[in-house]
Amino acid sequence: MSERVVIAPVEKQVRVRAPIDHAFTVFTSGLTQWWPHTHGVGGKPIAKVLLEPQLGGRWLEIAEDGTQTVVATITRWEPPQRFVMLWQVDAQWKPDAAMRSEVDVRFFAEGKDATRVELVHHKFETMGAEGGASMRRDVDGGWPGLLQRFVAEAEGPASS
Image (cartoon, rainbow, N blue to C red; front, side, top):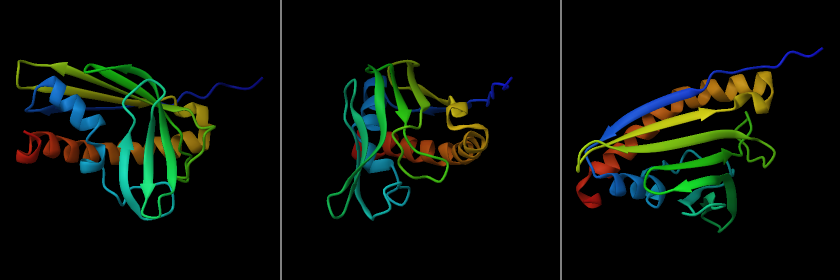
C-alpha cells in the first residue's frame, strides 16, 4: 500500500498602499513591470512576462526571439478579489504542462487606499515527493522577494 505524500503549502502575505483594483491590476496586467526577467523557465532571454487576464488565460514568458513559454494557466478569475493558476513548472524549473502545483492569490481591501494580498502556493505533492519538496523550498524562498517587487511597483509613482 502506498502512502500519500502531503507537502505543506507556502503562504505569504503583503500589504500594499493602494486600492484593491489597482493592486489586482498591477499584479496581473502589470506583471512584466515587476517580475524579474532573469526568473524565467523558457531557457531564453526574456523580453516580457504577461498574464492573460481571463479564465483559461496563461502566464507567458515571451523571449527576445518571440518564443512563448507557458508558465501557468488560470483556473479561477474573480477580479479584483482573486485568481488561481496551475503552476506548470517542474522541480528543475522547466516548463511542463503535466505539473499541477497551484498558486492562489487573494486581494482584500483594507480601506480605500490599502490592500492585503495573500498568496498560497500549494499542491506540491502532485509533483511527487522529491520534486514537490524541492519546488516548495524554492518558492518559499522566492515568493517574498517577488512580492516585495510587486509592492514597490504597486506603490510607485509610475503606478499611481
